[in-house]
Length: 249
View 1: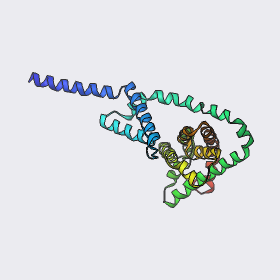
View 2 (view 1 turned 60 degrees about the vertical axis):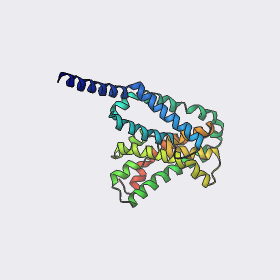
View 3 (view 1 turned 180 degrees about the vertical axis):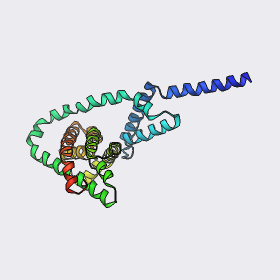
View 4 (view 1 turned 30 degrees about the vertical axis):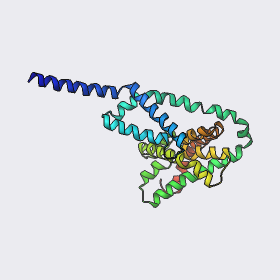
């Protein structure tokens, strides 16, 4: 009987040790980076749009958490370093932007106007489609700022009385879709200018689109980061007014 109890105890200890390994901060970090860079390398080799490293990494990490029983809270705590370095990485986008300063000064008016129109179209289109599908007002409020970075989108949604967590999910989905089909759609529309393509990717699919643009060249990335900035400002300023005019609030 004692032998049986010892065997059970050892088994439980092994399972616990396994969970400790799976939830280890360095294992989580290594796994996240390995999955992302492997899928990115695979996408570069094959050229398949569906092999988006962000999309595949999210799916594989969810599967990992489900199989190992590690909670999202533990994963988030272990991946804090990624979140920490994300902020200076975004600031670093200002370097290629500075290198394109002459072009920005020369084209400031069409750049500002294109971003203003892009912001208006982005908000009006999602509100119109959501209303057409019969979505309640709280869902519409949560989706209106889908095309800007998560912090801005969540703040806008919170100020409007929407659901910030839903907004965060919609922002991620928008970014992934933009990264998958953005450049292909621009190509079909015969938009060949690097400036126009970069601005469009930043305005439509925020940081995910900017990272995709940066993979093409620093010039694409610079104007994509400019698109993120301008669209974020316009969205924060204009969303309440547009929603009021459309009868949502």
